[in-house]
Length: 360
Image 1 (cartoon, one colour):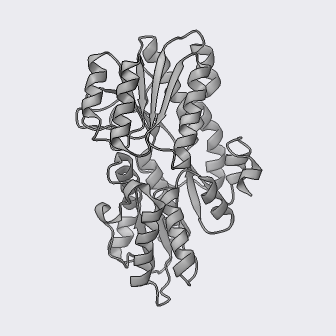
Image 2 (cartoon, helix red, strand yellow):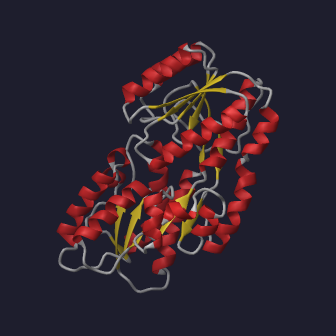
Image 3 (cartoon, one colour):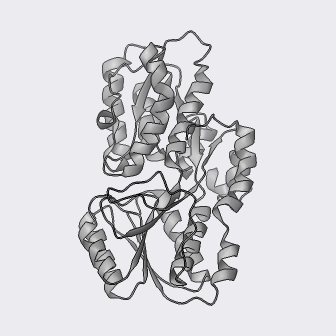
């Protein structure tokens, strides 16, 4: 799955093709207008901007496709999410679309869903150790990490520059299976340079367990970065790059650097193109963010719901990668692109994802 980094120009051009690759809302409306039934949509939290967008896009497109929608947010509380799913099942939802808080915590409630013939689509985060999961809809998470790693490799010119360069690593919640894919994709690109000494992680924190960030929390990332700077960079040592798996961790790193670091600004990666991070990108404080157009993922998920409701097989494009502990889960993987200061206007504004005023 490893791929070379696309240039900003190619990433911009690719955005148009992704609309076709992941499906558009219009295509689901025409095929699903006469469909009927209730769909439960369980989102983890409103605390991160991307889940608000995912939920809103899902609800809008499902309603346009003719479905009744029960959309719930669980405030990052596992017991709340379990209760919400139980209520969705008991209230007659025929399909559940679930972005889990913890991929290992839904086995019991999903066993209830299976007993009652309710189909389950894991959304963006793979639900682990449950044979009730019928499908998985997500972006290519390993590719997300690969693009972040390749971006750092390219910007530091690791194949040609003498180095050494100093790198620190921040990934996501250890209970989120995606975090391991993001981390794996990036580290597979960067580890040869770490092993050769061209990249130096002065904190010594490289292994997943040491760089994971509970709840993808900005505050947790900021606190850890404060400690890293104090121990390793307070004397003016240059930090060249920070691999951050998403925008909430990147925001914490940026906040810490602004408060504690006096050297040249490092390369900082991210993911989700949150408003605050795009503003930081424009201001030169964050180098890039992986753009995953949730409108496309929602549209593809609606197609999958529609197929299930009609008793047919849902469209998938991956039947080898994602094993949740009970077997391979048929998946649809949308392809991410990266936004940076060179292409964010075309990717984010011209596409209607944001307005220009939102990014001022």
